[in-house]
Structures are given as C-alpha cells and as structure tokens.
Length: 605
Image 1 (cartoon, rainbow, N blue to C red):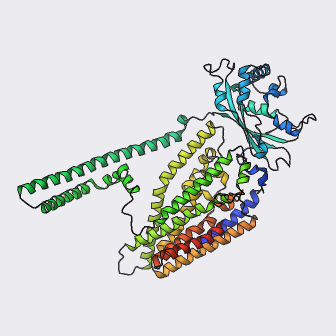
Image 2 (tube, helix red, strand yellow; image 1 turned 135 degrees about the horizontal axis):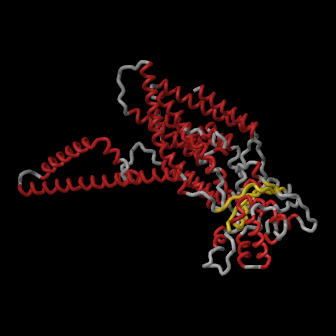
C-alpha cells in the first residue's frame, strides 16, 4: 500500500511538472464574460489562422465599426475583397450578388437577411451571429420563391476571435458568424472574403470556416456500420430470447392447467384425494422441468438471459426486496442524478445563450449554490460505489464454506490472486462491451453534429476519439489532458474502475482474517491521507481558489484525477467495514457517514 501511495505522489509531481512547463493558466474576469465564449478551446494550427489588416477611419468610432462588421452592403463591387478571391466562379457569383444587393433585388436581399451580423448584446455575452441555415437553403426553392439566385448557395459558419480593446474585451472572445454565400466560393474563398475586412485597431483573426451541412456521410462511415451491426445483433438476440421465453412460459402454464384438470378428474372418480393428486402431479411436473432444464443446459440459460420479459420483471419488481438491502441508496442515487441533470442543463443552456450576463446575476443568488456545489453529486456516486462493492464482497464471502484446515502461504497467495483476477475479469466483461458501444455511438453523433449543426460542440470527440479511444478501454483516460479526451464525461468511469481495482486488492486481503482486515483499514486511511496531501500540494502550486464562475478550473490537474476523487470512495469502503464488524444503530452510522463525507468532500473541492 505504501507503493500505491508513492505512485499517487509521483503522478502528482508529474502533473505539476507538466502543467508548469507546458500550460499557461489564465485568471479570468467574470465580469467580461470571456470564459463563457464557446469554442475557445478548439485546437487550431497557426497556418489556418488569418488576421484582418489594420485600418483606421477617423470618421467612424470603434463601436460603429464593430456594429457594421461583415455587413454585405459595405462589400462594394471592385474592392480587393472580391478581386483577391481565388476561382473565377466565386469572383463572378460574388459580383453578381453584391450588384443585385445594391439594386435591391429580392433574392439578394434575402441572402443578406439569412446571413449573420451584429445582433446586439455582445457586451452581455452574445457571441452568436448565426443568421439561418434553413432559410439560406430555402432560397433556391422555386416553389416558395418567385426569384431565386442564379447560382447555388451554401451556408458557412466562421469562428472569429476578436479583442476590441483592453476595456471592452479583457480576454479574447470568439464569434460564431453565419454566412449565406455562393457555393462556388468554398471554405477558402469565404475565409479570404472575411479576412478582407479592416480591423480598425482591434485584434481580429479568422480561426476557421466550415460548410453547414458538411461533407460527412453516415452511410460512408465504417463505424456507423459497426455500431449498427452490433445494435441489430443485440435486437435479434433479445427478440429471439423473448420469443423463446414466451413459448416456455406458455408451456409452463399449459402443464399447470393440465395438472389441475387431471387432478379434478381424479377427484370426481374418487381415486385419490385432491391434495395428494396435486402433490403427485406437481412433483412429477417439477421432475420433468428439472430434467428438461438439465437437458437444455447452459446455452439455453444464456439465451434466456437476454429475454426482455425476464429482465423487465427483475428490474421493475417492487416486491421481494432483500432484508439486507440498503434501501436509502436508491434515494441517494435519484437525488444525485437529478442534481447532475440540473447543473448540466444549466451549463449547456448558458453555453449557447445570447444573454450570458444573466448567469452573472444568477450566481449572486443563494439558490445558485445548488449549481456551484454540484461536484458533490458525483462524490455521492463514488461513495455509493465504494460502499456497495465492499459490502457485497463481504456478504458473498461470508457464504463461502472454507476448509477447516489452515492454508499455507502459497495456497493463500494463489487463492487471493485467483479471487482478484475473477473480480477484475467480472468488471471488465460487465462494462467494456457496453462502454465500447457508447464510445462508438458518441463519436458518430459528434461527427454528425459537427457536420450538420451551426453550433460547434464544446468538445472535439469527432477528432480525439479516432486517436485516443484506446485510453478509455484501458480506463486510463483521466491521466491525460482534457484536449485529448474522448467522451469527456468518461473520466468518472475511469476513476471508478481504478478505485475498484484498489478496493478489490484490499478486499481479497481483508477477508483472510482479523489482522488482515486491520491492514486493509490502515491502507484505506493511508490512501485518504495521501489524497489530501496530494490535493493540497497541487492547489498550493497553482494558487487555486474555488470560484463559483469557474467550476472546472484546474481540470487537468485536479478535477478528474483519482488523487482528488478517491476520498468519498474510501469513505464508502470504511463504513462497509464498520457495518460488517460492529452492530451499530443505523442512524448513528449514517450520521457519521455524512460527517466524514463532508470532511472528505471539502478537501476534494
């Protein structure tokens, strides 16, 4: 266990060293709304960034320039903006569009109207100048338009980073600008058109431009066929299993009905009393079922494991609850998941809102504490996991009949290793297939959204999952930077699996005897202390102070790391040992759990 603690400390030092060498941490001013600007974290190569040329106009204030930024009426025919665009088709179509826009032709006016421009509330957090992709595409429909453009149109979304001045934008903001322009221009042509504007003293760079919808095709993606094949296979297996289960249940009911009929007939004939006849028939029926079950064997039972009927009865059953079950766990789960849904709904809404300043107002309210302290909800799940894993293992082990003969050291080591490998194998086979399916489905969805939606996802799974999915399968993705994450929220399952491995190792030792149980308890305490020290060292290194407006600060150093999150899991382990060892009033136990958990959670947060 000392080795594990040293490993945690070493990982902490490695993280601190990497962070100090490779990462510059910025302190954000919540009043400028910069930290709410969507998409700043997207990786962009220097070759893709195009800056606007400097230009000063004494007749126009900086705010007037900003309000008219990317106004097509100012893109006069004959300017370098059109002449410098590559491609004869784009040059011709843009000249036609700008001439007709100046003349007030309806199709050109509608093209301009479908494009994004300054809508106001920029200084209150509105970074979306999107226009309408749907209306842009509708322009070429002759059934709804008396006049249509003489060329195909395409909707583009550009990411533009802008810093007006130190007062207006203390930190760089990122605009999402929608443009309805000729399809012949393409991504590079649109980038040159936008870069031809003048900056008027502000720092403006074109980060990237993409077509919406893009070129991604679901039918051409191999992973779509892979995930679709797995889904179809699962549906077929469930359907066949359910059908077999229905036939089996019908046969069972028919046998019972036949038995009752035969019993009634025997009763009328006076051959035997009803109870005796029924007992004989039912015993015969049970023997027949046992024989049939024995003949069907393991393959039949495996097939029935996928039955929708059988699984629904078990999952939705409200009766026959085990007396050993801790029923309040279900309430904790419900409250915690509702809490998680609440905070993520809040964060996602304000990520794309045009009135982000409302968040600053909301943060002043007392009720916002439910959002600011939402990390407690995740810690609740860690506590539940640690409690149930340990308690279930102890209860299962107590039912095993062990030989009275004392085991040798070699036999004990072999038995413990075997138990540990069984626990680990069970975990892998239970989680990994479903985990793989969700990873593939998530990557497909993110690729589709990035291609079809004007809103860029705040995560880059369409890029990172192709390269880094294997880290998720090994459950080590939480040791890598956030920019390399595949399915960001999977940090939880990585932590939970790592804690499960540590707990399983301690459990196979703890069940060997009282002295071994004491060793496991001391090991839990050592890990808890190591977690606190490691968290303290990293927090001091980065001068970390909890801020309401930055709930995910130090994500790579602290938020998703096991040395921060292991505390509640260990609390669950310890109180499982208390429940097993001592007969204490449940109310006292849960009040103690709450107290110690609060201490652990405050150290974690």
